[in-house]
Amino acid sequence: AQRVTQPEKLLSVFKGAPVELKCNYSYSGSPELFWYVQYSRQRLQLLLRHISRESIKGFTADLNKGETSFHLKKPFAQEEDSAMYYCALSGLTGGGNKLTFGTGTQLKVEL
Amino acid sequence: NAGVTQTPKFRILKIGQSMTLQCTQDMNHNYMYWYRQDPGMGLKLIYYSVGAGITDKGEVPNGYNVSRSTTEDFPLRLELAAPSQTSVYFCASSWAGEKGEQYFGPGTRLTVT
Image (cartoon, rainbow over all chains, first blue to last red; front, side, top):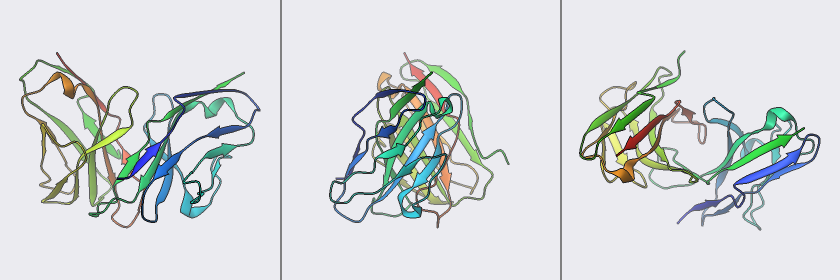
C-alpha cells in the first residue's frame, strides 16, 4: 500500500528563518511526488512537482529515494508563505492519475 | 473560466436523508475526482472518472454514488446520510496527460446530525 506521511501538523517559524516541511512516502514502484498548497480562503493548488526540479515562490523539494523523502524547503520564510501544505504521491495503479495525500502541515510565519 | 465549481457551499443533513453534491468544470478535463477531508486528516479519494460514462471507486466509496453523463459534470450522491459522512468534500479535475496537477473546487462542508 502506498502512504504519505507528514509528521508535523503545525510548523511555526519567524520571518526570514529557513523552512523545512517534512514528507516521507511509502511506495514500492517509482513514485512521482508533488506539493500542494492552500492559502487562507483559497483553493488547494499545485505548488511544485519533483519531476520538474523547479523553484516556485522560493520553495524547492528534492526527491530522496534512499530516504523515501520529499521535503519542502525555503531558505527565508515570508509572511505570505503562511498556508496549509500537502504532500502528494502519484503511483496508484488503474489509471486516472490518482493522488494519495498526506495529512498536511500548517505553516505559520511569524513577524 | 470559472474552473471547478461546487454547490452547495454548506449543508446540514439529518441522519437518513439523501442529497447530491454538484460539481462542474469548464476546462474540458477528461478526469474528475471526489475527495473527502475529515479534520486533521488528508484528502481521501471517494470516486473518480476518466471520462463520460466511466467511473471507478477510490479509497472510501461506501455510502456514495457517482455518475458522469457529460464531460463537465460529476455529481456525488449520498444515500441515507450518516454522521460518519460529516466532512468537507472536494471535487477536482485534471487533464489525462498531466500527471499530478489536479484543479480543485472550493469544497462543500457537510454536517450530518
